[in-house]
Image 1 (cartoon, helix red, strand yellow):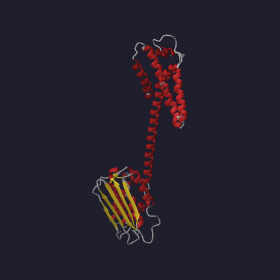
Image 2 (cartoon, one colour):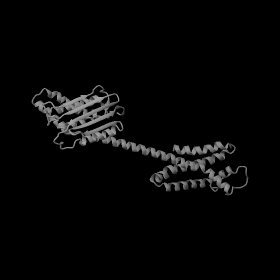
Image 3 (tube, helix red, strand yellow):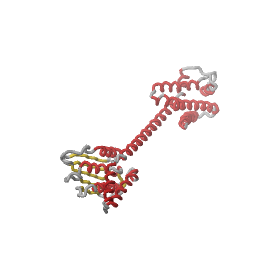
Image 4 (cartoon, one colour):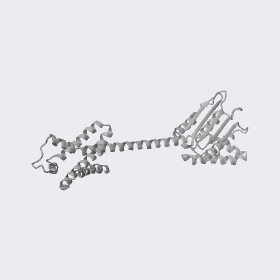
Length: 343
């Protein structure tokens, strides 16, 4: 409605100010009111009927034809001498000329066409305004859809936690309690902390890097309970910047993959190396593990865990991360660099 009033008022006010003829103000006021109503009709029909029903329904040709026909019909109706308001238009265009009504002539036709400019301008202007508004609305709807889709996908990816580790950790802690080991309470607290981190902290988009590192340490410690021999696991985690923000559960799949495919519990020469370096601008995470010479495990190296984390990186750090995954003859290597300015 605001747009309709704007276009109508604009094309009534300009001619009124331009003419400067205040001696016939009453006559001019009536004519301006009729013109204003005509422009209102053009804009309203265009925005409420023609654009939504034809233009936005991929019927642009029919829209143009109907729009031009509608504007011409309103112009002819307003300029018709036989209409109740015809006398005002006649007098306004023939002041001081005397005689009866003006006959239709090339000059009269040109005058009518000149008077049609406000209606065509209102038609085109309202069309451009509504098309721009429609495009902006569609762009917003598309952005909202993409955001909702990404959020749903992230929730799904976060939910893909492998429950096997949880069961194994519970069994290991249970075994410690049965033999009344002094390690049982400490490891039970670690497991409790991991569950709390998963259930509550991971709901946020980002977490402090210190909490993610703590989770990794607990994960590794509980894995090492499987074997009393002391597994060959080298850990170097830089905790000098614990307040850096990072997406939760982003580093775990690489560590989990290393324990799963190195077969470190079964092979005496199996090994795992985990390194995390930080700076104010980036985090660099490297995981390497041995591969058994006799062949791989039943699952292919990588699997759904690494595919999930690849997708998370694409969603959370597009253009702001570097991930390299490679397999040597006897080792599997992962290199991940994340720019902290993107988190």
